[in-house]
Every structure is written in structure tokens, then in C-alpha cells.
Image 1 (cartoon, helix red, strand yellow):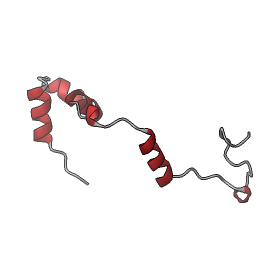
Image 2: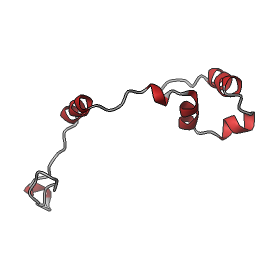
Image 3: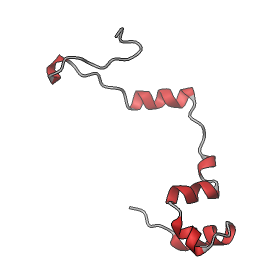
Length: 79
């Protein structure tokens, strides 16, 4: 587990963003990241990256041996 840099976050939130302590502590971590622009630094999901992720984490179709025999319906399944 990584440690949270509270002094750094407080400097960024109350110093750079000029939030009041009350406003700072009311934020969720993701809200603070968005306000600091950290989420904007993430690259968009491209077709190549999507294919990379699909290869790394393939969908698994259930077979008849799982008890329901229905499988997974999708656009290519003919269902």
C-alpha cells in the first residue's frame, strides 16, 4: 500500500487551488485529482489499446457444463 502525501495534497488543494480547509476536506480523492488536472493527463482509449486490453483480459463464454448451458449472447453470437 502506498502512503498518501497529505502535506503535498494540502499544499496543492489549499495553496494552488486556494480551497478553504472545509472545501478541501469535503472533496473526494477523485474530485481533487480532477481539479488538479491529473485526470486530463490520462491518454484517451484508442482502438489499439482496447485490443491490447481485450487480449489481456478476454471474455469467457460459459459452456454447457456450468449448469445453464446458455452461454453469453453478443453481437456475433447469432442470438
